[in-house]
Image (cartoon, rainbow over all chains, first blue to last red; front, side, top):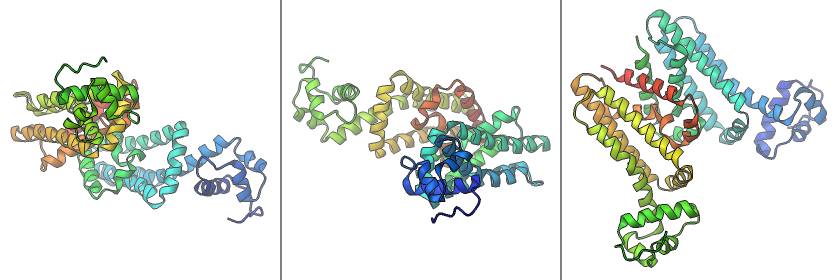
Amino acid sequence: MPPAAAEPLTPERILETTEEVLRRFGPTKATVVDVARALGVSHGSVYRHFPSKAALREAVTDRWLAKSVVRLDEIASAAGGSAPSKLEAWLEALFEAKRHKAGDDPELFATYTVLLAESSGVVDQHLNQLIDQLGRIIAEGVEAGSLSAPDVPAAARAVFDATGRFHDPQYAAEWLKPTITTEFEAVTALVIRGLRA
Amino acid sequence: MPPAAAEPLTPERILETTEEVLRRFGPTKATVVDVARALGVSHGSVYRHFPSKAALREAVTDRWLAKSVVRLDEIASAAGGSAPSKLEAWLEALFEAKRHKAGDDPELFATYTVLLAESSGVVDQHLNQLIDQLGRIIAEGVEAGSLSAPDVPAAARAVFDATGRFHDPQYAAEWLKPTITTEFEAVTALVIRGLRA
């Protein structure tokens, strides 16, 4: 990556470069100075946007997690379609997103696994966003009469917990097994059936 | 533990002592010689029952896993009682057993976590036993008309996967959270509802 100080130094450019630097040096060795050097700027310029190394690492983790949330939010917010089929599409999209992140670039996935462990606040916020989206789909189904849930947030949380095998990065190695799709479909069908009115 | 060579050297006595030795020295340091010394016998006497260190470690892991299976098998095999309430009792007993193992003796639990990672055959057999028990409960419910499952083994597997958060040792740290019982009950209720006829 050649230095390119002529472009304006936006937070997005810093985060993109941080990801590159993390990939290249690994999460234990990468420093803010490495990021600044790759951008062709002083480390002071980086600190102007991110006040500490921890803040920069949190921001890059947040950005990585946010990528899959956008697509999932589109499914949760789509007008039309029954809640049960939305729920199925949402769970499928979540599994696909996680599986791609793990499979397409295993090194970067391993790097982010290290970052996730140190940014529990960012992770909790991400998980809450996902559970909120599930809650919106379930609430819609309850209103339309296709789903039944006396306590929508609790039901959303239960669906998320019951499908953990297919989104918790702890299980990334299992996602390569040839039987995983069958297992995913069986759990998803069971869970959706459990919510039907 | 004083040497007590006078008692007959049964496999059960060797395994009991092996567990003690593992607890004391840790899974990386414990040797067959340590076990023999604690029993006051030659290591040849131990090898007469267990042909290798690996075989001894597998046998002690198997014994540890088998302890919870007996109680669960009693629930699965009990005459009378509806299948849905049996299913609930079985999932509760599994969670309780795992939680106790993790909480009552965390050092021994950590030791066995290391042993489990090296004995994938023993672990797979254990998981299959548990899934078989679930299958028997579900089959009973299908026959009685209280549960519905077109493919009983697949349904048993799905129930096991959906409740992984409450029996997979990867989640042991979560089992200490004050909200875990509520989360367990929500997932269990969802899964059982998903199987109801």
